[in-house]
Image (cartoon, rainbow, N blue to C red):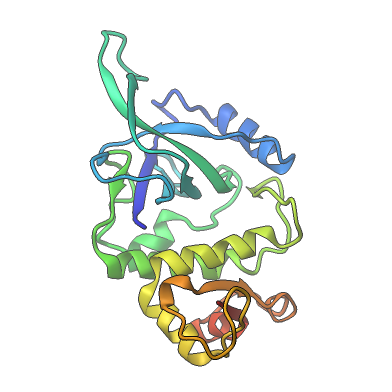
Length: 236
């Protein structure tokens, strides 16, 4: 799995603040069927890859959401040019959406100190992050910020068909994008068997992560790597 940066400048984009806020409300109501976004590095993008939406060109740049692609890239008419030009797009799904007008949560000012390799204020949309170490560090930073959030709200929304659904989804991000940390979790916690018999040899690719809900409730701000390892359960 791969991680892409989508960039959104609400001052020039056809995706307006009002549309972003409307989508946030739909997600809170579990009424979101997906959408698409233009992709610059389309060549190797695949269904199931992950993305992070950066808000750029504003007074409060930063992460405005993250999720997964639900299909391979395709061409369609450009959103900004009416001369017949086509762009590559990919359908996507929001796991989490953030209203940056009302919060400094995961702000560029905070993140650019730790991630100078990433352009936080401008650039193409749909850019692949090729450095695996940067991907892993960024995902762990986001997971540790989001884990303490107990319920979706008007600033940070995610669909909640089941209790603590978002925290379960974050386990997928760690499984697919954080191989070094994944190894640490597996080595530190006892493997629970679900699809395999105890004692069978299980390859790492077949191991999922679930959060121990009771332990996860104790997470607060400033979650450490050790905190995450403690609350994650490897499931085979």
